[in-house]
Structures are given as structure tokens and as C-alpha cells.
Length: 136
Image (cartoon, rainbow, N blue to C red; front, side):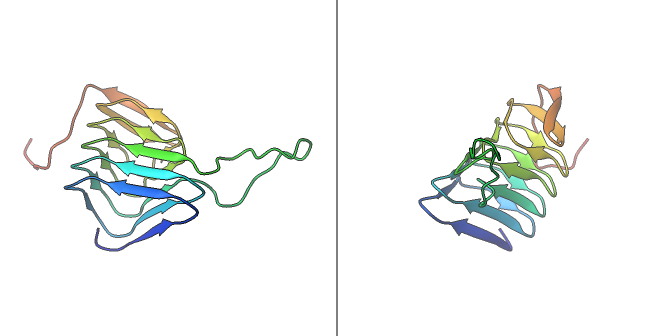
């Protein structure tokens, strides 16, 4: 990573596999027992954020119960391309060989070998992978 932020607090864990590359400004923030696990051979664009929880609680007024994730888990399997401005939150799990499109918000599981876009991210194509070359 060229420039970025790594925050690990309150028993958080961050594990990054070998041969991962990122553009400018990647933010990884694991707190409150949350974890971020990234597989090998990943490629990240600029302004990618992986944040396990919101830090502050959002509570139901009647029950007092927390409604947002506390100390969530983020899993990015091997050979995943996160395009520019992708956001992953607690509960995100990106399957191997996937491409997550620009500006996507990933909140839950996404299948391997897929192109996923949107907010929240959804698969638009399956049975794909990506390569580092620029050839047709």
C-alpha cells in the first residue's frame, strides 16, 4: 500500500496475504474484537475502506438493543480486485476471483468468480476471473 490507515483497537485483528497491491489511500479498521482477513494476490484501487463496525452504537429506542454491527468480520478471499472507492463493512465476505465494481458497498456474502456492483453490492455476472494484463 502506498498511503493508508491501519487501525486495530480493542482486540481487533488484521491479516493480509502475500502479493496484495493497493492504490492510494486504503483504510483498514478492525475494532471491538472485529477481524479483517485478506487472501493472497489481491488488487485494490484508490480509496478502498474495510471497516468492521461503526464505532458508535445505533440503538432501538424501545428495546435499547444495538441495531448495527459491533466487532464484525470482513473476509476477502484470494485473487479479489476491489475497484476504486469500494466499502466493506462487518459481515462482508467476498469470494475468490471476484471483481467488486467502483463505489460498491459490500455488507454480506458475495459468491466466488463474480462481478459485483451497487449499494449494496450484488452479482451481475458469474463464472469470471481477472488478470493483471491489458490484452484483449
